[in-house]
Amino acid sequence: MTVADFHGWTCPLPLRDYPTIVLGHGGGGKLSAELVEHLFLPAFDNPELAALPDAAVLQVGPGRLAMSTDSYVIHPLFFPGGSIGDLAVHGTVNDLAMRGAEPLFLSVGFILEEGLAMSTLGGIVHRMAEAARDAGVSIVTGDTKVVDRGHGHGCYINTTGIGRVADGVELGPTRVRPGDAVLVSGTLGDHGMAVMSVREGLEFDTAIVSDSAALHGMVRDLLTTGVDIHMLRDPTRGGLATVLNEIATTADLGVELAETTLPVRTEVQAACDLLGLDPLFVANEGKLVAIVAADDADRALDVIRRHPLGGQAAIVGRVVDDHRGMLTLRTAMGTRRVVPVQIGEQLPRIC
Image 1 (cartoon, rainbow, N blue to C red):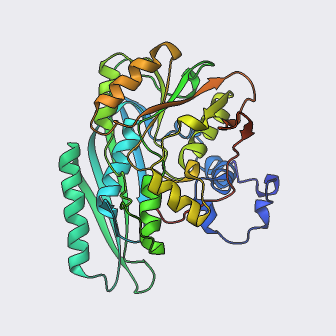
Image 2 (spheres, rainbow, N blue to C red):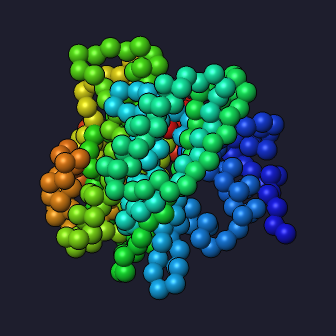
């Protein structure tokens, strides 16, 4: 039996010296990656899990299904532009869509804290049902548990999704090639800063609103128009920089970003500056990253911009054959710097 090799855990920090779990272990950064690599993967070892995709694509009879699961512990439960309920639907639908799947069914598990107001739960469930209807998916099974007062922060939600993958759709890091273009479907950091603006009591001339939304329609448009897509990801925990670092590592290639092309709302940048945060590492919940063949970059950009959620899409970088496994940024001054994966997470509890 394969067991977790804790003694093999190495820099940047000796993780074997952590006697307990810390918030950073769930943040999508280096602590999360080490936990997955040395504990979960050896314990649950199988080919489908080893690639660590947003969703597993499984051969079932003559067809293929995608399956994904995610848990939501966001605080506060309601935030500008959304709630934990619709966020749970959008997040799982998007994980399926990033594998090219058409979402079909969801399960939902509620972990409720004793003392949660019934009206609050009703609002969450209503928003969740509305999001599922809008996305065209059915919530077909579920579970409810209640924990002692003071132990659940109101409500946690787990969702699992199943979708159908069409013949010929193959997306993943093995298809990424040097020269590929990197696109984002809109402005960066909107969701994370919408949540943090509420937590920190920040006020701006224009309200910061979460971008939480289902993206499978946009992906469907890209696929049906024949754009040569090599890989899709949604930049949630850890933001764009973490996602691109993961792609660079998995594909064993380099990724270069151009700072002047990155779309960031003025109010989001201002909030990041106030809090000492980098929008490259702030989560979105309604944007995608597309790696496409260089010759198809302009066509992909046009398809995304014609979708209601993609009006501010941009080509922000390219895949290169040097500095493999690394993400770099070409600054507005013309210099280039490495953008490493963070140890933990800038913003805990934002999804």
